[in-house]
Image (cartoon, rainbow, N blue to C red; front, top):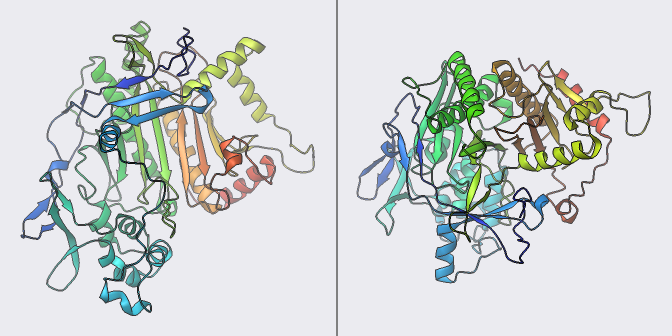
Length: 532
């Protein structure tokens, strides 16, 4: 069987799929340790977050197995099954529910009874938690969400903790949906955001293994999600509790630079450890040190034979914005505090049905690689050079010459932020490298800075157009690929009237504007913003 053909259907009439059994090493690059209290137990025991600040590197062993199943049709991607969770459900014969929580009211809460006659409907409380701009009213809803620790004056200073059946301490949260929705409302006072969501440790025991600090304004923690739905773990760069960013409007270029810097640094340092490249004492690498390390990695990878590199691609993504429906449906896979996620992707995964055999592991950029090979084989022309030429020489879709025909929104000598000729999701923007750079290992300092600026401009201008939820992700080529495949990013806003119906599920994207007019509108918005 040609292993380049990504499908779970074997020619023999059976299914093939992979299983990841992650064991890996994590280099700890954190600069500072910030131990703080999170709350107290009912017995008065103080709960602190020291578990989130480990000393030294981490060895991750026994992470849950992840099953990787290519779709029967390659253009529908790949499915990942959380092994431990699925096994527990199989043993308990639990049926997966597709309905929201059945809880409908908060009749037991007397202190809020005066707000409404009779019981407080839960959908009303959720609607207030999501949309209300009154901090006083939001605080009145807090007792419905969790039990808090208060000081002598009654002010909330932490959470009340209880012990789970396994002995672990956990916050006493009464309604998780309401808790998260309140904590993600920008109108909630900052000290309550910190108590509920932002202090390291309040959302779990994930270790902090990296940090970015610039002056007194920009502070970012890098969390390790060790037992992750992304095989081999992933990292999350979260704006810290002393750098609260609940909106793109509050974001500046230093913030984006810091978030992305942790991505570049983590990938480079992790690959260096994999390849046995010695590193000096680590903290935050300087730009010069980062660039030197990148060049060393390229030289080392060039010496390796195909198949000798365990991790050969990257994953980067950003879900911006939060919304929760009063009917109980979460409308975006995110939390409001600005963050980004990233990981290394292995070259292969163990074939679950054949001992000692492997199969290709999925990366979304591989779909682009396959198409580029097909295009160049069919037309005998390089796809990306041809694509960039078409973008730069675009003619209006309606053929008119009295209106603007440009698709670009922003560009410099390295990258272009543009409206794709065939948009998805009504408001999509793309970023493409104008030079032969296909992944972040090929991106020098100048290119990395250009990418960061383009992402910053993209989310800023989409926000100026009214976008409140944006999904961004990277499409890149494998580190050893000889293809002229350009590094790309997709920035996709969620449209308020189109959450994803049958048209979108068929990849039929319906819009009511020409792409050239959307690009013109974005350029107009950009002219009114002071970004740099």
